[in-house]
Length: 332
Length: 237
Image (tube, rainbow over all chains, first blue to last red; front, side, top):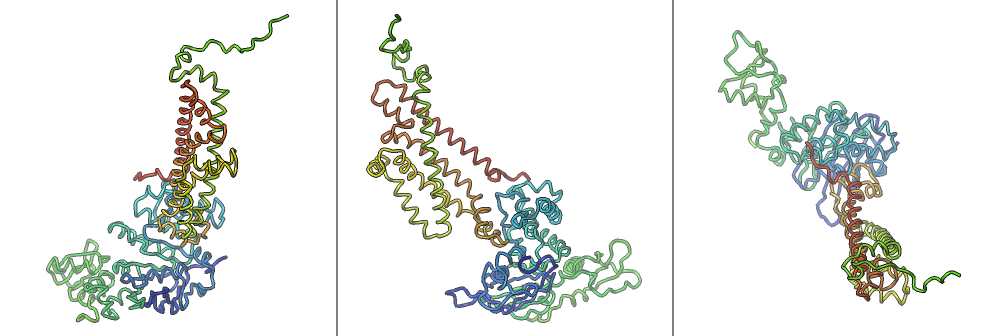
């Protein structure tokens, strides 16, 4: 067995004062980063270009070598694992997919299993299993195609399947959805979250898009110029109370709306309907609070009714929505 | 007592075409096929295959070196370019004192002319691999050799085949000049025909060299299609 142990379920990733300084440059690319990604969680590394987020990612699989500090995966220091063995235990997904255009979909996915001398049967079964996992089924229709014969979204699914080929405990994703059109990106983001709920790989995802980070990350780590960590917390906490002006500017002036979008009507304390319901708009409990607010504003009402058709199960007032969207520093 | 055989063999009656020295006399060509043209054609193919094969191996190794150690690309390209621009007859003249009027002299010169195009094409093919593909290969844990043999070289095949097509056609053409050094290849009957007013030998030899070049080029096109089905695969969705 190689590297980080693998196969034993998701592993924790720990950045322990991890630093990178390129020769001839005064400012570090990454400055003593302390970050813990608990097993099975998604951590979104986000920030402006020059913030060192891609550097932080490639330090993990030693495509960039640490200048200082350490990174541990499942308790093992990556400094003590040979880079080739380390990388084979880490799924790696990049923008533009990085699919090999001269290999069929099946050959792309099975490259690492074949290099690791899996049996032909195990390899074939794994390819079929993975194609189905990423929603490319029936697998037989896709296995023999070349990447140029797939749409952008299909290519990225194959890229994800390939990264999962030998069931690594950890996934690294570098702007995985950056090259996709907005509609496909939205679909892929949500599909990846569903997939992740099944496979629970500890995942580091790099993005420059704060909305993607908020959607994808269990926690988000915001890096700023000079490779310093500006804030590391849940999306809700970052939006509610940004740690600095930089973070507040970075997440945007509409952070209260973004925060509303994180929750649904079902997350608010329910208020019972007294007597006959007011003539307010009705929305299902799964509606996010941002949409709910938009409905209220559009109707000019003081709230809305919660219900999936039939009698409303409760109501939410405009005042409750306003409180849900309040952030700690509305005066910034 | 039977009559002795005639001193001058009976060549039969020359055809109307041969008597009139027509541009191409098929009957004469077929009559001389096994004596003149078939051996010359076979020698021509042998000289070409050896030159292209040796040139390919040398250029491939040089391109791998230049791909791995970037600074070597300039010097290697310079040497190959120097060999390429030497006039063939001048190169023969330089080599004959060293290696004599031999096949070796011819092959050294022919190989020299293949190197520049093959080296440049192979190196370009290796360098043009999309960075994302190389990065993905490294990131998934391929060794340097695995990246080279499983990703870079297969993706360079169209450029390599392109180089082989150019170089093979060039070599087939150059082998005709080798007749100045050795009595072999289709250049030999051409050179001899230059000293006679009879045109068929000249026309037939030249036409065979052209047909050989076209056939070799076509063979490489087919080989390329077999090796790179992905290069023609386009979106079906």
